[in-house]
Amino acid sequence: MPRKSLIAALFLSLVASVVPAGAAEEGREDLNKAMEAKLTADSIDDLNEVVRLIESALEKGLDEANAAFAKKLLASTFFLRAQDKINNIMVGIASMEEFHQRRLSALEDLRKAVKLDPNQPQAYLKIARLQLLPGGEGAKAAREALDKALALHFDNPPERAEALVLRANLQEAPEKKLADLDEAVRLAPHAAAAVRARGLALADMDKLEAALADLDKAIALDPNDVPTYESKALVLAELKKYDDALAVLDKALVVKPDNAAVLLLRSEVNRKAGKMEQALADVEKVLQIKPGLVAALRARALLLAEEERFAEAILELEKLKENDPSDLLTLLQLGLFYNADKQSDKAVECFSAILSVDANLWQALRGRGDAYLNLGKHAEAVADYEKALKLEPDDPGILNNLAWVLATSPDDKIRDGKRAVELAAKACKATDYKLPHILSTLAAACAEGGDFDSAVKWSAKAVELDEKHEHGDALKKELESYKAKKPWRELLSEETAEENQ
Image (cartoon, rainbow, N blue to C red; front, top):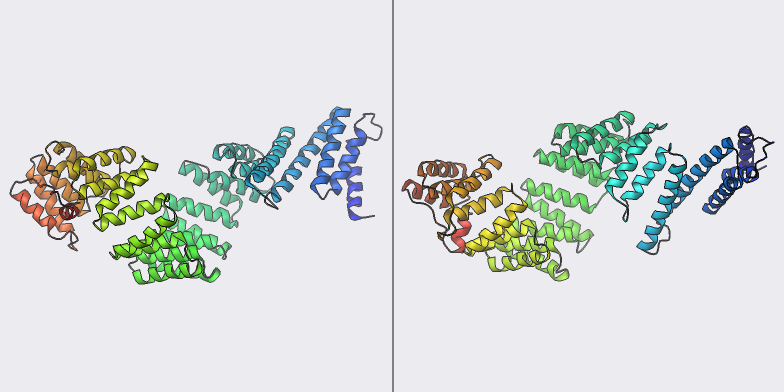
């Protein structure tokens, strides 16, 4: 007798007490057939037949005990059929519509399963995953399914840990996310995914040293997981331990040589470390591996711009713009580079094109405001800064630039010294009173309000902080003006405007 038949026979003898030989229900024969069919099932068609037989047995009639047993058997069959559908959800798929149909079919089976037998945590876990797929109902529905799963008993601690990690990713409150991950790690201390997830959560909470400890443990548990190396490198870079971060990325490249994502990250770390030549070399290597990769072309443009090679940087982005004129990120970056290269008219064009598509993109409003300021169009600059400020009320750049125009514009109708002081003080506080150009704005605002003693104090502090003389003589000229009890005025020229931003 084949092995499956032996197993089926054994199972049937075990459930004889549930379906007694002398039972008179009409559905008993179909239920017996269903049990044997399920034990020998090895295809979705076999499972379909099991479902048909159980539903037939219930319809024909079973006593209370056998009906309860049949429903549990049907629930487990729906679960198995859903699992088969999930495993094959992408096999031979011809369209997204077909994908959505398969997802819904699996979801329908799982919902039938938990309706018949609510004590199925694995079914709720799979429901959550299906809800997070394209076309699903999203995070809220997934979270509800996970809450139901975790309210039940799990025989398998690693599986419960998996559910906790998934729910943690959907938690809005950092403390709740960390609580789920702490429990997941407790249940499955050797599960690299749980440890890694907690490390990332700790990093998001700025608990960087604790994050590093978890990421190191995750690497020890799974030395071949490249994303963990990337995450560790990001944390080290945040701690300004650039050489350590680069060493970690070198290890990641040993695991997976010529990985474009790792090379781009190493380029960024090199950039932050001031190693521009190495940063460019990494980007060039990526473009050899993946010619035309948009992320690499953008990275190269940024590196060129940081070396003030604006013409080359702009040329890179203009090529991207030609390939995809609707790419707002390219337009945004291009507008910023045009501003930096004193081509403010072209910057206005870029930012206006973005705002015609998304009127609430505050970065574009701030960028166009800067361009208008460079062009001496103060009323237009103020209008854009005001809109940007409503969208991003705590951004120090917007606060500073709006305060500067309100304090220094030659147009009496635009100046508002009192508000300029409020905005500039908020910008200074947000930057810990450490940025000279923002202290310069506070000084200008104080001078506009007639408080020249405060203007001299903040202006002198700005000069003191400008150790590398990044602002040329502009800050010193402002200080001399305040000492002479003269407020500062923004001239209607691009060069002067740039000096005073």
